[in-house]
Length: 130
Image (cartoon, rainbow, N blue to C red; front, side):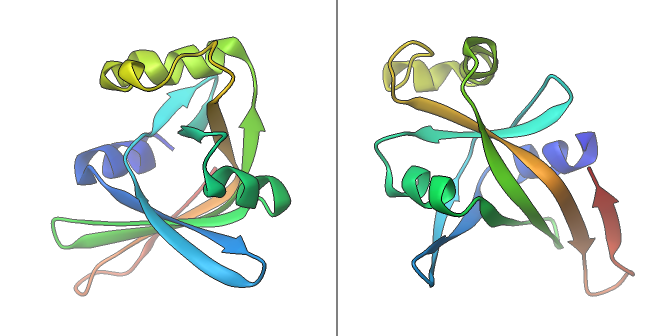
């Protein structure tokens, strides 16, 4: 899991795909953090991605960096604990202008039953389960 987190942080931007009533939706994200032994992402409850994940938690994350790409298949499960939100915002202090762990909008999700595949054109894929 640490290797997956490092890959996403180094890439800077990753893409999160969710389902919106049968229509895939993909958007750029940039927050990723390990807390309490799990890999987390962050969004706002007011965003459509939040409603989509609550309706169907199955998601994929994809990023490309330095000739390698990663695809993570998982369920994203909300963690409403203050500590989980604070950990994410402490890792990304620039977000504090828009989010706060007590604002009723900040939302963090952890990856459940995740399978990450790191691929390239020149080596066999590496599979990481967490």
